[in-house]
Image 1: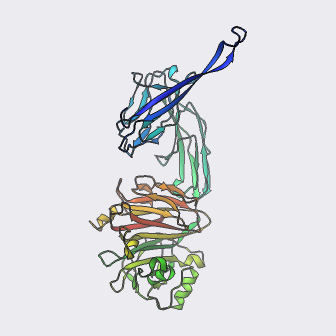
Image 2 (image 1 turned 90 degrees about the vertical axis):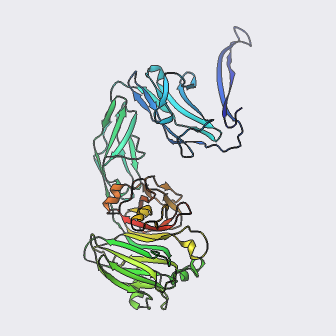
Image 3 (image 1 turned 180 degrees about the horizontal axis):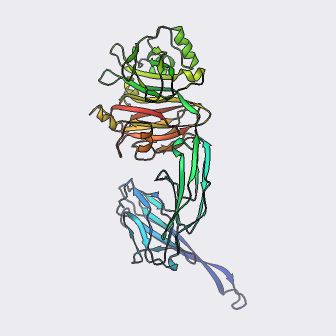
Length: 537
């Protein structure tokens, strides 16, 4: 045997189903059945072998007689679609009379271009109608696709049941769209000119629906002779929730650009009363296990508008007005003599009006600090404006070592309030910061979203790939971010295919969440942004 190569051992046996004791008493067999056991034996190899993984399944095919029917799954080996040596690829046709049998090796069956493990059934006839599946085996393991069907059709599909013309739901609810078509091999739902990822059945369930899923949906049913599109189904999403507490923990160092710089915007009109805090010593007071001796000893808080400085402060001084404001927004109190900084300004609100809160060391020291911004008005009245985003720039290290260096990450916390779920865009921008900090930006960020219990809701490394769901049981709807979604909230441009991270998440209201930015590879360091944007309908 060749090392690493799988060998297929087929064991067949017969069983007696009945005896004809009248013709040949006690001996004649008139009924028999056959059962086959297939065993794979792999010759031992001293090298590790990449196991096959089915990434995308083949799909049903309905074609005209004499046409070609391609089955093109995606199979990877350690992330590559190149098929390693000593790997066997078997396609099976399930004959209802005899069971599965291996096909291939003749002009009837050829490879699908671009799919090394794919197969095309050529010149389809009635004898080819049935089910097929793929089996890939090597020394690393066995992967088997789902069964898919091949049928012959004589005309394009026909829509036999249209989806409901319109539906509306609160953010976080479930909306179900259903249509039906005859003669269809495949289905695909579409929204705003794009195919909805994974929506390949006649029924589409949109669980934990968010504002980015609002719009007109259509179902396209296809077979080998053509396609048909359903009527549009309008889905409206109502939202009554807001960001009302946004904050970021990060490392404040002595190097260039190693302060914490938080930008935030409001919507609405009139003025907005906010509590802004730059915390250092109180981090250690509240959590001595993690921050004792590591918190920034003398933070300086600077609030700026887009055009001018508004306030600069250091030790808060024990003001009773601030004490009352902290209690109103349920913020932790400060010792009256602490060096933590805080202000309670009233600033103009409205579209396009933004501010930055900068925390740096007042005396050239280094340590862990936190910026907090509270929507004071939301705690005392029904305001005409709300906080709609926070974007904090800071230094991200490897997270290794001891002392304050182990806290060299950006940790953005936010709370929502309201009667429905809320949809937010969360980003970790590193490579795109090369425009502002060439050579000093974080090349490979990792974005992780946590619930209030510290369980992972989702992670993303490279916004061109889909977020990966975590173990959190929070009823969250997690979707990839798109350029259109980012443009809708005027987020800065990030390049297609970059290592910048992004995800769209619909989250239950009246709860807190944390978006953390760390080094994805444990070695890259530099300046990064962590951003949370409210996504309105």
